[in-house]
Every structure is written in C-alpha cells, then in structure tokens.
Image 1 (cartoon, rainbow, N blue to C red):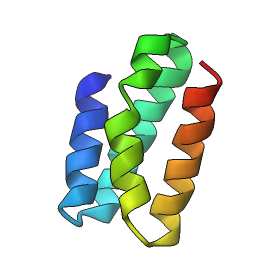
Image 2: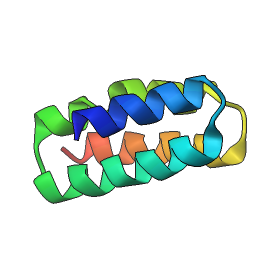
Image 3: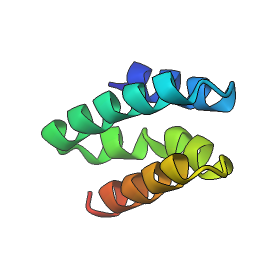
Image 4: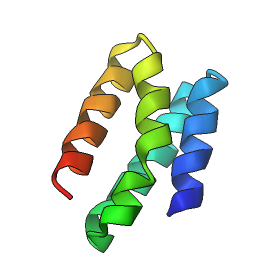
Length: 72
C-alpha cells in the first residue's frame, strides 16, 4: 500500500496525471479496506503532491485524502 502511495505521488510530481490518479485510487482503496491509522498517515506525501497541482482532479484527490486521513 505504501508503495502505491509513493508511486502515485511521484507520478503526480512528474506530471503523469492519468497514471498518478489511477495509482492514487488504488492506494485509497487499499487504505479504506485496511482501516489503519499508520496506513492513512502514510498517504500524506500523496496528499501533498496532489494539493501542489492546480488541476481540478488533483485538487479533488487532495480533498478526498484529507477526508480519509481525518477519519482515521
């Protein structure tokens, strides 16, 4: 799970939005199923990478991650 989060963050930082968003959705799906605080905290780099992008899909992703992480 951590690898998906870090991979998605790297993809977003490199501008590979389509693959980054896809990988992020996989990471989020796994985090929801695991319900672990440490797993959700591990999504912080992905949230930061998504928030740094200005497009609406990444901003939506950053908000979704903020909600997910606050529910832990």
